[in-house]
Length: 81
Image (tube, rainbow, N blue to C red; front, side):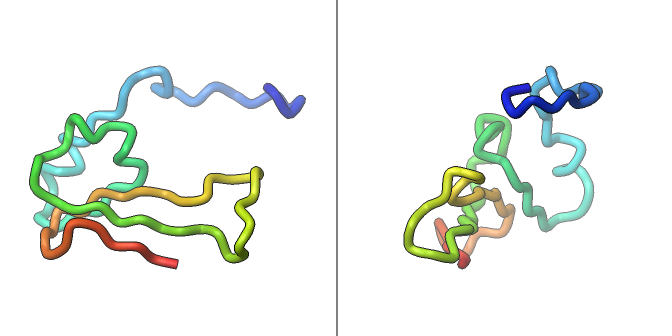
């Protein structure tokens, strides 16, 4: 690993995530990391943006934000800090 640590491989990590099972249960869904499999989501829905920057300067230790897809559609995009 780049940071010098060795980790046990995650089973199934090399396979692309399929949200079909999650979407088949219930009627309201929030799926984090959905920007990585947006092409497999229904065309209706909205995006939630979690702005993780607590200070003005972005850090390089983690992503500045995270995206989630929400099955409920009342706005196109929401930003949460």
